[in-house]
Length: 284
Image (tube, rainbow, N blue to C red; front, side, top):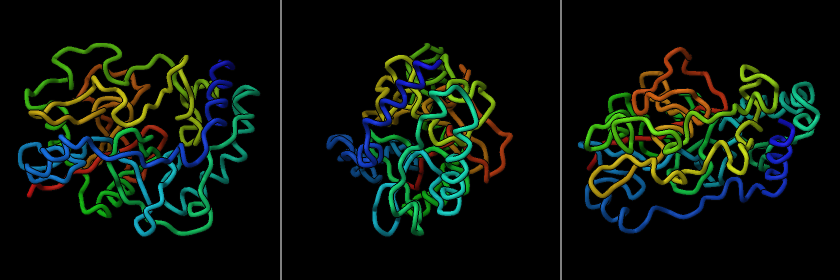
């Protein structure tokens, strides 16, 4: 366990805030042109009468466009509460190496100013986690989109062929980033049930591989709609939908239910290290 913590810490120290929150590049030009021709923005895929973000949500400040840290809830009051709380709590849980691991950095904007989350959807980003349904809906609204409904989300996930998994009809271990064999809270805190708002959880590695992957990194985990793809709808992060549940499973959730995986027992204000989202909108 200690070796995994040390590795996660080393990876953390090697990354500055710019690397952690970089905006990267936009969608590939061919897919972007296809989307626009079908009445959707370039970062979205056409699914029947609506559009769905190709990649899990990242967030920026609505006014400045500055990237917000994916390791904290994108709300001024909450981020301050989490930051202050875990400066203390991280020193009280887990092995010595875990206690020594610092918190991910926060930009001056998030530490000293008010900001408003806006959703973006781009490849190669660390997806925004620590999202409540309330925050996910706000971020989509600020992008001129909306939170997907359960029916929209499941339809998009199953692809045009209506399959249970993005890649086919039967579960295959490792094709999507789900059902990983270690839990980050067990690594850092000694128990999978403790400290789910610790900002460091998504920095934990399994061997040479991070538990949380960047958007679109798991290329085989792609739901197909003609020549368009939607990535990571199964695994990586759980995704909130309008009905107040989150779908698809996250990297450490022990589920083989694919596009039908869901968690329904949390209030709209709930958030932790596993909760993310993506946005939808009506097609033009």
